[in-house]
Image (cartoon, rainbow, N blue to C red; front, side, top):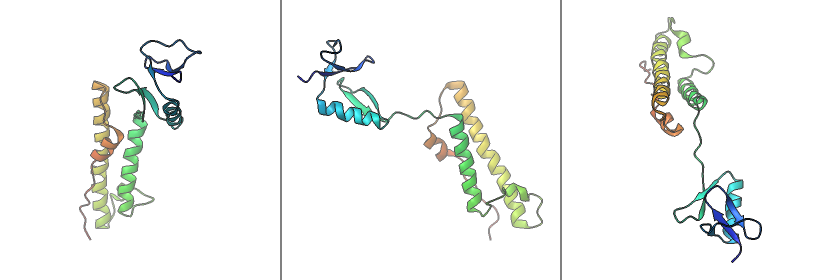
Length: 151
């Protein structure tokens, strides 16, 4: 017996002779303990596994409204940059005499609105149900622009 135990009630690691050890606490080796501490120092969370022994898991990141907003902005920036609009938004050309720019502006305004409405829909659903997609699911579901004017 090495004297290191884990108890899942929030006590965490307990050491014989220092802590009171509940009967339900599970024994772990010094190697397991060191590995768990190393994982914890790297941001992992320690929680009980199915057998009560501690395991290191990657905690779920809590997604915020700002995370969704940044994802939408990055998505829109990538799409407009891929079309060659780096400093200005395509909507800046809505009254252009150049047919491609005018059509790009119309496409962009409709697309930007669709992206923002999707974000609003997600936020409304979250406010009503408490359920929201992961950031990866959110990004994957963002509308993709289709440019009407082809050269």
